[in-house]
Image 1 (cartoon, helix red, strand yellow):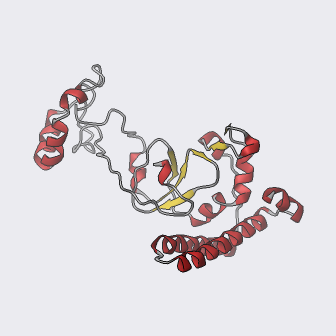
Image 2 (cartoon, one colour):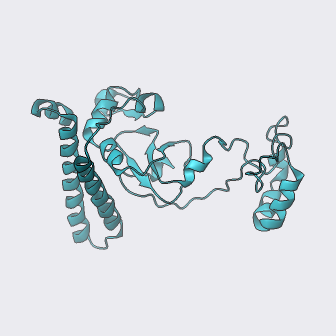
Image 3 (cartoon, one colour):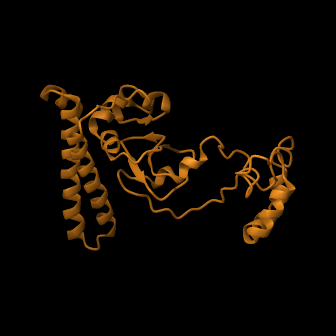
Length: 237
């Protein structure tokens, strides 16, 4: 969920959902269409605990949409399960918040499923993750995205695809890409260590390293975009 996202940091997930696509567990069988009694029989046989749990809510689930439930899909299935892209959730991906005051892009390699307050990019590109979290990219987005609240008082940006898709990402050589990947990899490690730190002394030391690494990432992005010293002052201001 959006509230679980902190910059560069893998979320601690303590909430789970039952993801049940149409015709589950025969959802990958192209010959199955409409509400399938065969699918339900296999579901009941292979997943009895889950089936019996959902069975206690059958009357409510059946009443969701009378022209669809039990006709286009089984009573126990999700009404809208995003058939065109749900497999992407299982992949490594960059995840970010729909409405944000600051750049909060993270890397997920746990196959987390996100709710509607989050978007994701199905890639494990640490170079892209570093650029997205940089002050330069955020400066650009602040001038492109719609804003909730007063822009002069750090209003929240709506990071919709219509704005994100036009964010210019510098094309770089392998050396520059490698520099960014190394910095982002270090940042992810530091964030993990910070979460596990037991003493204030450890936390303070790690926080300083995080701030220094963040500064190095920003400096590298300034270089990649070819910003002048005057332009950097504008971005940082």
